[in-house]
Amino acid sequence: MKKYTTNKLSDPEIRHAKPKDKAYKLQDGGGLYCQVLTTGTKTWRYNYRIYGKHKTYTIGNYPDIGLSEARKKRDEAKALIQTGIDPSQQKQIQKKAITENSFQAIAESWLASQKGNWSSSHYKRASSYLKRDAFPIIGRNEISTIEAPQIIAVVKRVSDRGAVDAAKRVKGFIQQVFDYAVVHGKTSRNSAKDVNLQLILPKTIKRHYASIKDPIQLGELLRAIEGYHGSIVVRQALKLIPLVMVRPSELSNAEWQEIDIENKTWTIPAVRRKLPTHIKQANRKEDAHTVPLSEQALEIITEIHQYTGRGKYVFPSARGNSRPMSNNALRTALRNMGYTNEDITPHGFRGVASTFLNTLGYRSEVIEAQLSHKDRNEIREAYNHADYMEERRVMLQEWANYLDSLKQDAEVIPIRANT
Image 1 (cartoon, rainbow, N blue to C red):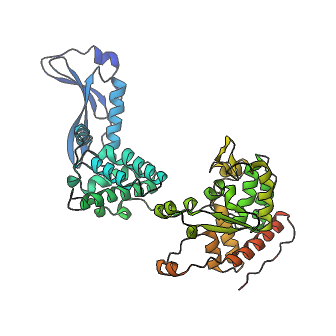
Image 2 (cartoon, rainbow, N blue to C red; image 1 turned 30 degrees about the horizontal axis):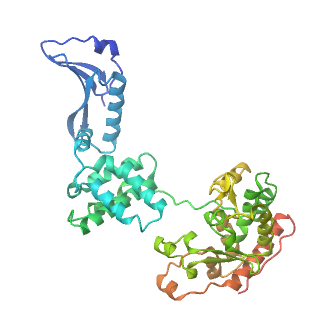
Image 3 (spheres, one colour; image 1 turned 135 degrees about the vertical axis):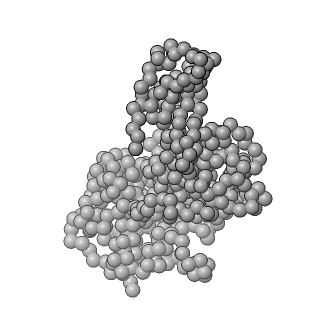
């Protein structure tokens, strides 16, 4: 392979270059050169090869584009070529007006149609991925002219920055835009369905939330939480989360009106659960999740009540009682205690409880009900409305007692599941 020496030019050399009888080139290397025309115009160009063809990319005129900027644009063009995108074609695409049948226009129409059906976070995520990754490359193209190689270029550009999961999501959003376009007669087929991600993306290992599976290590963590010197709000939240098996966002957003001390329950409304948007919006009582509270959980809640009981949230933000504790507060506290993301995460406490309780012989249906997991068998789910409340109450109380024995570094209290 021929090697190029780059950065051979200097700004004074270009500035003082005079026109001649014929146009000539001032080579900077790496395919970049400044062509001096007979009229005195100096134009930056970049020679490259793509799909087996030699091509020239016109960057712009000097001195409007200086030497350093020309080199930067050459490097950007090289990066596009490495992902299979022709920089000359890309430049022409960006010059095109956005028509009503362009990918961008149709994608924006699709986003608008889905806004009321999605959570705000999902809408922002879809919009962000399309605007950042898809629109710059295929946004101005007529959607009926877009083929699989152009979509692959978008996906690989995302993957090549190390974001394989993001690349999959981008492809998914593009495919949904095409589905929308087919339904509305903007194109006859969905080109994104021709893109097989298994053939173009590197294989990855699915990572689960980090959790602790050794009783001794779990006891050490519980003692570390007990001795946490941060805010009392965060400390009490850290003490409670191992006992209730809820999602961190459900805990951090807990409201006092959801707590029933007399009946020893905490009822999380559907609007705050991990559910489809239309179910969250309906917020029916039957879609709420009731958590039975152990004596230890009640003690923690009673203690925090004297600090936050006059406000809306059980665990308010350090910035004011009008908002809940940040979802990252528990993660930050664990990091400050010396526990990394590879050791334990706030969500990982659910995995800790599930692992131990399954090992100890508790019924999987009861554990899954406490985790508020959706039944993967849709037919069974439609007919199974049991919430196993009494079994869950017994299980969580015995789980709390078990954690106490680990925390006290005493002889571990054996707990036996009711089988």
